[in-house]
Length: 189
Image (cartoon, rainbow, N blue to C red; front, side, top):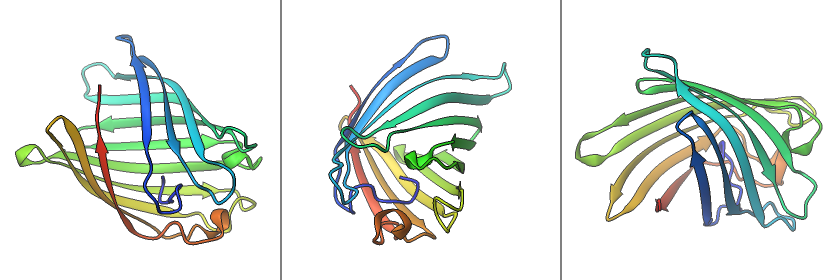
């Protein structure tokens, strides 16, 4: 997640449920196991927003609110997000006035690139920069990712390399932001 492992570099199982209306309004929830080195074992995200296109320009946009929930813990927090997309490119920003329930602000800026390749493959790449208040972290880390994905036998398959210029120690006390390959298998119902 944004260059950090949220599961102590171990596998995770996650699932989501989304509802989208023809008007562009949507809502959903996502959940996964996590391991922050304390008693936290589950993250539940709840989100709602509006996504559409600007006339016939080919420019898409998405605005919404996301709530991060960690049952039994005190670091639940909210994040506002917005993005613009055109052709293969996207730019987005996510802002919280209480990032990680710290009482401090954090803003995440990201650029994305998605391109369909031959033989049903898709290439994706991205770069992100997290601008934290100094009280949250001494660093304002950046991260990047590049990956390939495809659909095969009814499942989504994704192989992504991600890395960060942070070591993650400000948050987790150990290096959980080093470069790694992430393999994901997904199924949409």
